[in-house]
Image (cartoon, rainbow, N blue to C red; front, top):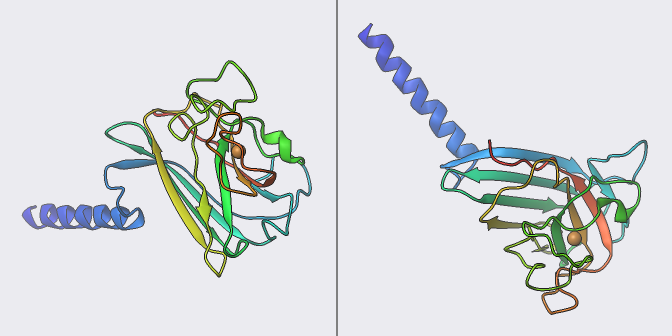
Length: 195
Ligand SMILES: [Cu+2]
């Protein structure tokens, strides 16, 4: 009985350390959503998992991994990884409201915690990385890159459905805030609220 108990505790500890190893620096987090994909042209029927609209900007076959984490202390964290993309390039990356479709504009506007009454939103009071989810990243010479961010809130159910890659870094000045040029690629992600 005593031996069984010890073994049980040991295997529980092993399982715990494995799950921590799988998500470093995220010990007190639950994984809400994880999506891994390879970019491909829009073929077949929408919605798409990882679609490129401009292969010169986001090559066919580039890989993406996006994780949404729900820290126990509150808010929402995100980690993004990209590989085999355009080398030495800065992408503007945001969470958008609609699923990825056959056309770049199908992903709709940015998700905002406090919605801007004036759409499209380019007012820095609303279009900023605290009220939206921005995951801009710059690739290295191999086309690999990563980014992470955190916001203080949770998504409203079903209102955040995609991650969009734009052609340039996200602007922050009034009248342009949140804009980042053309939409090159889109990843379908069913972002979740807490519990
Ligand atoms: Cu965007």
